[in-house]
Image (tube, rainbow over all chains, first blue to last red; front, side):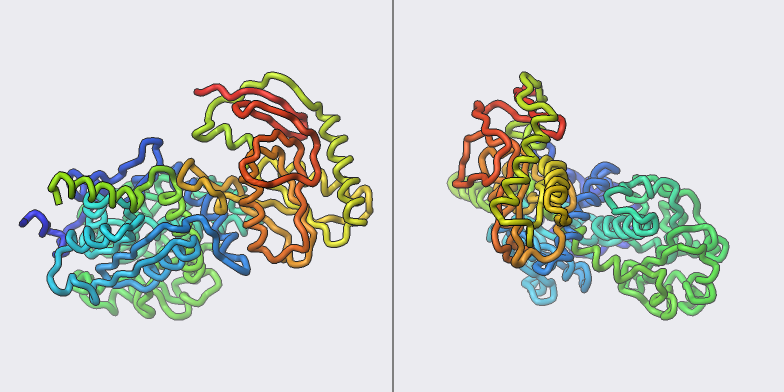
Length: 375
Length: 189
């Protein structure tokens, strides 16, 4: 069965550009929706559109309130099973998704590639189908290959959430970033986030700085911020821009951080992704840190009230200096805190909707196949 | 969930067509005043009383009730709102999304909670609300006030204070606001 060993094991070193998940993996039923239009998967920000993003932010407000309670747990997803399938390492995303699922009263199965049968050579498809056969409602998938979550969505009946695939997308990161921006702007205007809505994004000037070439976070954020009406400026050395940059819906591309800093509201720093070979695109990391790292001296050029964001993990001293990471204008830990509430919202919206995939349906379909000799 | 939301969503979705005005704005106002007096009488005053309106139909009624209670007894009554979406028993059966952010004033341990909703129908929303309230502390007691009790209970729940008992057909709809109570039908879109 050679088809079972699809080319998903090797990370292709290519620029997926800003395509939807369907295009990354042909014939994937990526934005698959149930009969009454409820979403089943979250593979790309483009699955949501501006209205979908707005709805996620609105539902997240309710979960931020839940997170503040003495008992931060609701019974909303009782009886649902969520698997975190992380084939690439992660700290915050995995813990954040697992915390979110547990606070929704779902059961969580945690899967790490390093301690699994993938090590024995089992293909991703066999692994996924094995887990699915145990009765699972959602797969949270991280993989070093672009399009892996879309492939999983094609293989199983459960909901699939993309928790970062190669260079392609990291949609929940972009959603929690948008949520954090809106929260900060609402506080400044002394309003609740609900009152602020998404109007605050209109004309908001955001600079995304650093290793854009290898960044799924940048791709998801560009799509989300553009959908909400923000003006995005990409700032990077030419070698760390993606080949497809002309097709990105950004206002400006710059190689000069100092020129951009005074006229932005949000400075979004990206991690230099050494494990994806970012170092090969630079004369030296020190030169990069000098020209594109945000240090205390450079941060003084930021407009008053501008905020600094970073998706983590930080390379302190490279793209961000210690002093800047700990400035009041840096909202990095707030991003992490909001991540749990935003992921609760996404899980609830996908798994709480009618006719979402249920384990009983999966088992029933297996049973049918068994009777007809199909398995 | 108030009746207003219920009619927007499956399986009972459709457009509300009003048929007959049952209570005028003045009638609603008088009912709230009467309920306020009943609350004071039954609890021998307002010590530890917290009024909580269910999103979204119960919220304006709760605010008004708290206001009238304050006018009667001269002490401020804490008033909050509660969205029960995450506690409903029809998650996965119909689209359930929170309408607003819950705002419960502080810890409810030892308090006397007056829960306010617009229409008491199947009782399932109240069941969800009781579970939600438990997560904010063990209230001394919970009492239920509704503007309209339209019958058709599916679980054993009853109201302590009722604006108007109103027998209805199960497929009818009741629209409650501070402007009055209207009985009508839902016509499929």
